Image 1 (spheres, rainbow, N blue to C red):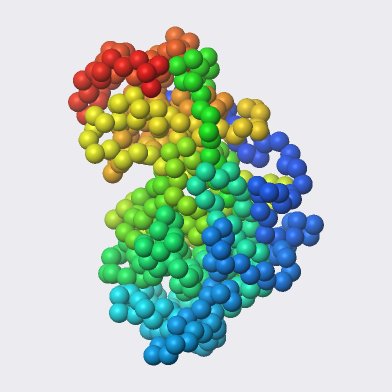
Image 2 (image 1 turned 60 degrees about the vertical axis):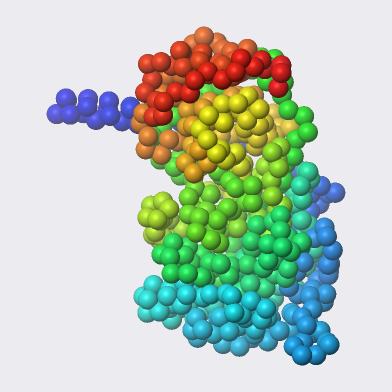
Length: 523
């Protein structure tokens, strides 16, 4: 019995290496008290802050709808400028009136949903395909679930859309390239906007050639097409969200911040020491990384292939925390020195699998506490990695510099004290389809986090070999008191040195030959 206990303890110990995760900082414990929430030139707030109370759905601000139809704000379906050409006549009519007429009726089948959506999207009637939606409603759900969808959930979703002018009363700013801008809205406002996305009401958002070509897709029409089981599981996950919010509207807020940095560290002269590392082959960023800054391995168009066939880390996170999806409405493609930080989203679903094996499992009750602004203490950062055409490309100094700067922008908070910063919960960022080397990417993220004053919890997603390799290299550098600038960066830029240090490690790919002897100062 003692021997079995000893084996079990040894096995458990090998599930993680480095600093115990309990010693890493988490929100809200490490956070500083928030100032009073108020709107500024760089922070748009869409609710009445003076009436914000725990447990109550926030009041929209202003009280009456304020229309806008310009290049700086979202073009809303309820705008009086949202006009629709009348067929065979030289006239236009209000598209919002068409939407209201379509959604004031009953939807008793997937065909009714299709007819409603196409009534105000006539130009796409011959191209849009509703096969996945039809399959879900006829074969993909139990009969009682289908009845609840059409008798309860969908009518409430339609009502949310019809109430758009009462819920989303203030023009929603576009978070454009090079902006440092925040946007705070209520979970009710997000639910309203996502219901609009489901019914494909957003104007000018159905073509990649439109003025929104540099923005992600937001209308859900591509989710409804095709016969892939991926689409069925995506729709199940999203309908779980809509059922939940229409049964009991959540009462919190969510903040979206586009952060753009113009000044980056002089990496070669950094004196920062490496921060603490917890690395594990068990667990997930969203579960074990609660209260930490959680990394979304993003596409530069946030949400990636959410409405298409994509179903890896980013798409899954957007599905189980669907309030993330609304960032696609107003976030322009991320540049190399930018990230998107989302604070306050709620998790509504549990899942199993990944990509082709992904399955919606069940409802999830989110127990994460709220901060003083009534946001869940869940902070997610969307940071996009480079995609490499060949393996060797990523070892070029300028490519590593780009990834360092991207990660640093994502981890850095210019106005925060380091002791108030939570650890970074991350993993194999930019690997897989993007072609990144897992060991290199782990070191780049660790270096950027150290420069930003944050510890790291690294999840290898079952890869024990990677866990041991990264920890061995980290321990070597830490024991030698290597700084970010003088040591680690030097090692990274001279790949031969790195291989010599870690020659006992087992590499999944053949180690690359040494790169050109290019000095850091030449960058």
